[in-house]
Image (cartoon, rainbow, N blue to C red; front, side):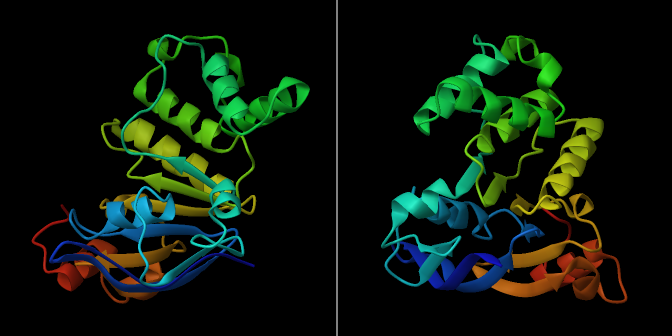
Length: 240
């Protein structure tokens, strides 16, 4: 089943074109890396998917719902982890999640079950009573991912979620999110770090607002390491 479709999506900041006719169709159960150097258009695309920005050029469909004509249903099918943390550090993990559940209309036993299920998926149940301030960076990220899953979305968007984490935490978060894709979620993982991508992962390579490649990482890499292919296609001396 197609979980996310973009058809000729364009967006400009005045005279500067940030996205130039972006099209793709991504399926449920995929881990898809949105790979591109800084300035490629990744953040603009995420802003359009979450309606922080709106464009009249092109169409976006989430879980079969047109984002322009039926935004409530389309946005209800999306869970988001932004690059910048958005947690209340002085509240406990569970209180943070309870507040977010309430924003989605989940209360009482229904909210409790959703919170427990989300914590279990990220191996965070034993930290539920701790203040967020006491958690390390990796566990805070896990909590944000758990929060994004509270309302059982079809699509999980993560905007460079490992920024600022140490190597062990980056690997753990990447592994957890790959596991989530195997449960049937579409994961769209924005990154400029090639080492977060497995050979079987789907990759949308974005550069200067255009999709340069749309295939598995191994197919795009061909006879060279993906890092080298990425640098050759984007004209970068190194991923940035």
